[in-house]
Length: 244
Image 1 (tube, rainbow, N blue to C red):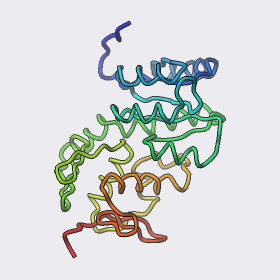
Image 2 (cartoon, one colour):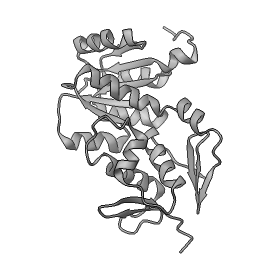
Image 3 (tube, rainbow, N blue to C red):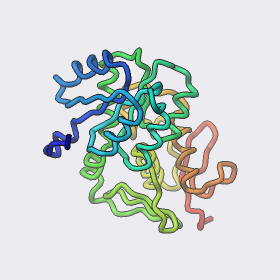
């Protein structure tokens, strides 16, 4: 069945749930739909990849434990072809699971035991970082060029040596924040305020995991980084590698 055409506002409110717990999917749908969301669900990994990449979504809620293909593999395949915000759901609260998900490209992570109110808050937080919102806020800002790195806020793209960087929405926002504050330290709290609604709790290592992913994509050596430096107990700063 082909997807119907929707207005841009309707597309921004469409949420895909990829979870084999059909009861949970119904509960989430029942909660979100009165809030103005159009919720659809699929219940295995391969179908989730197909739907996530085949249509436009406001966000994807993705379970870790799925039949056919686990959530991490689903996330890898989504990220290979889409920057749609992905919020991972899991029955397991292990921090390593969360770190793996963030490293692959998840925008946020939420245990299934979380309240529906918190789910809505996190969903709204990742939506704030949608391309449309950031383009509206930053559309007049010129490209930032630092050495071989170019950050383009209007199109939410970045290149290094003219090679496009494949960044998740969170990674782009972090890189943009560091780039526009080049040479100045940004604390973890400052970075968190820029990528997330500040009243919502996040776990301590999330910024470090995202920065590590950005460094990897920049080709930076974590021990001797050319672009993103760590100031222990302070935060991060982005520097021009061609300048002393």
